[in-house]
Image 1 (cartoon, rainbow, N blue to C red):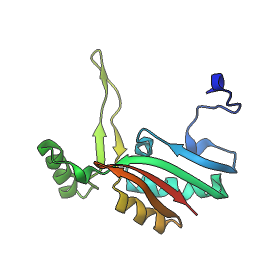
Image 2 (cartoon, rainbow, N blue to C red; image 1 turned 30 degrees about the vertical axis):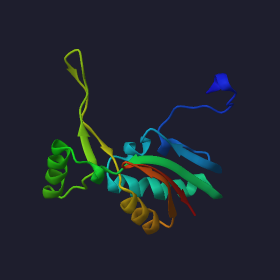
Image 3 (cartoon, one colour; image 1 turned 180 degrees about the vertical axis):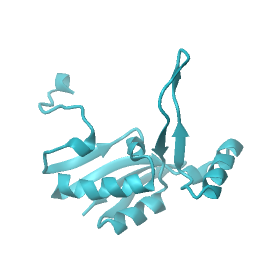
Image 4 (cartoon, helix red, strand yellow; image 1 turned 45 degrees about the horizontal axis):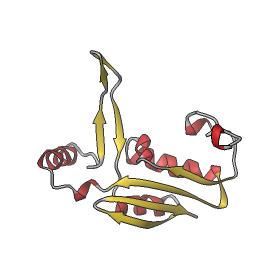
Length: 141
């Protein structure tokens, strides 16, 4: 980012940000997944209120897992539902050369659920593009 001229570049956990007055929060590559689950989504949307200017917005992409027809994915979603979890919560654990990392979760949130959580936390949500379950959303005040 610095190579292309962006002056204020930092790598940190979003909740450690102490600055305010951003006009855009950009989460591409399904980066909204870092919130892990729907409670994390709610926490994130509430936190962003303190980061953004009055006309600021969040731009994000995600995957609507309801669009799948892959039998293994459908079984996983059904299991999540039986366990009382949202269908788009994915449990993962990485392994490299026999070493296991910590278990973690990613969230793929469908457009309707994103709209509901946006509204519940005082935001509006517009789906800008939706192709084959991959969508782009704008969340704004």
